[in-house]
Image 1 (cartoon, rainbow, N blue to C red):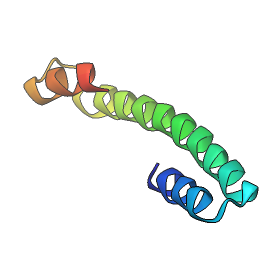
Image 2: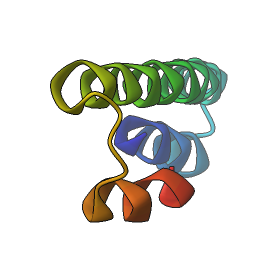
Image 3: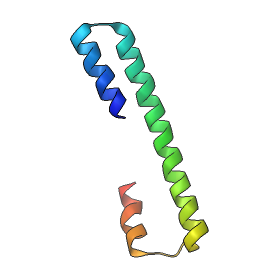
Image 4: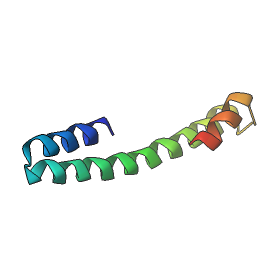
Length: 64
């Protein structure tokens, strides 16, 4: 997600269209891998803690 900002700024500074395209690709990849990260977090919670409603987990779930 950080690279999206960098490429967007490079596009604004240089006007080079390829930076804008790369920013969009990075944004798409960031959104996709965010979902993957959330899914693996739930799986790890289920695997390691048998999905017990632990306080830190109950705080993290709405924040995801």
